[in-house]
Every structure is written in structure tokens, then in C-alpha cells.
Image 1 (cartoon, rainbow, N blue to C red):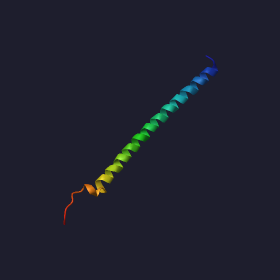
Image 2: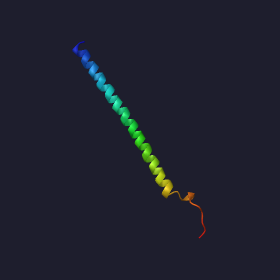
Image 3: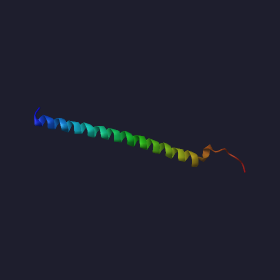
Image 4: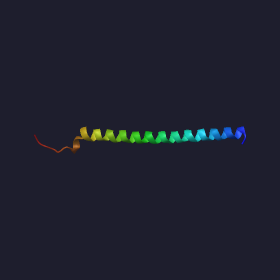
Length: 58
């Protein structure tokens, strides 16, 4: 195996590894965004959605 072929193989491995990390980072970001959105909706539902409260005449 020549030095050029070894260099190309190393470059290919680095590119593959970088691609794997990017994919993992995207999945983590989407998961975190989903959790934050779910939490935000929970806060809205718990504290600001007053239409769900029972109507009581005082």
C-alpha cells in the first residue's frame, strides 16, 4: 500500500468520524429541543391556560 493510499484512507476515516459526530449532535439537539418544547407547553398548560379551570360564580 502506498503512502498516498494510506493518506486517502485516513482522510476517509476522519470524514466518516466527523459525519458520525455531526449526526449524533443533530440528534441530541433535536431531542433537547423536543424536551424544552414539551416543558414549555407544560408550563403554559399549568399556569396560563385558564379556560381549563372550572367556572365558579363568586
